Image (cartoon, rainbow, N blue to C red; front, side, top):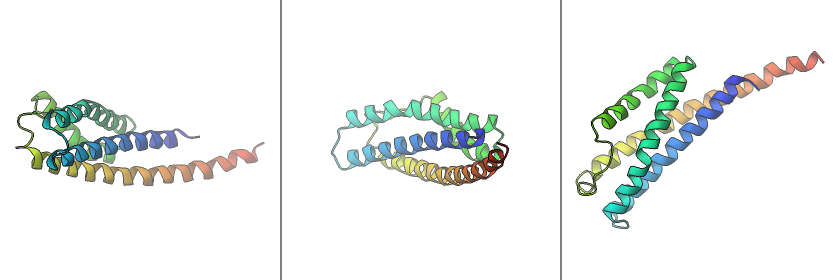
Amino acid sequence: MSFDLIFWVLCFFFDLALLSSNFYQLVILSDLEADYLNPFESSSRINFLIVPEFIVHGVLCAIFLLTWHWLLFLITLPLACYSAMLFVNKRHLIDVTEVFRALSGEKKFRLIKLGFYLFLLFIIIFRLILSAFNSLTSDEHYVDLF
């Protein structure tokens, strides 16, 4: 099994984790809007997921940089820089007292991130299939040696 295939499988699971985390946050915000959750519970659930999401996205961006996948690095870099800016300015957590005022903006931001992670997932799946095909076709030549 080639390193390239392992790399794309790893990226697939990283992006799947980011996608599911973002979707879960969007569901929580929708439940808050429909009055199924109270503001404290919803903001504590979302705040619990924000820093791990930033870390996983930063690791994914760094992996793209270290493996010389420049296009994917440049695609993921703006969101990583925006997340770093939010973290440095201490605006990354959702405030319990301001959650209803910022609800529509938070939902729009999460929808944009969901679309971004879906776009990234399609690219990663395409590259995963391509590297699996290349791995399977190139390994046939090694069977002939034995």
